[in-house]
Image (cartoon, rainbow, N blue to C red; front, side, top):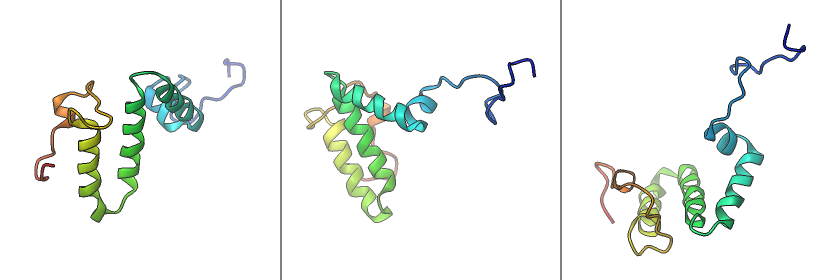
Amino acid sequence: GQDGGREAPAGREGNEDTSFRWQCVEQPIGKLLFRRFLEGTPGLAAAGALWEELEAYERCEESERQGAAAAIRGRFFAPGGAQHCPFLSAAATATPTGEAGP
């Protein structure tokens, strides 16, 4: 083709994907570098820890999820929690409908 012989990756249609999800979640090196950035930046370490806990929550057994969710809410969402994340909105930290509160 006229693009110097390079083929676009399937689904990318010749455009580089510069989204956060692609660069910092789907790409292993991007994810590692972004996590290290969070850990090393004052005020952002809690965000990195929250991300790690949310990924662990996604991998845990269904029977363990209620306890894991309560621990996450207490540690990251509650004012005074060990790693409170005050930048999260009230909607993001609200207890889901049908789930018991802490």
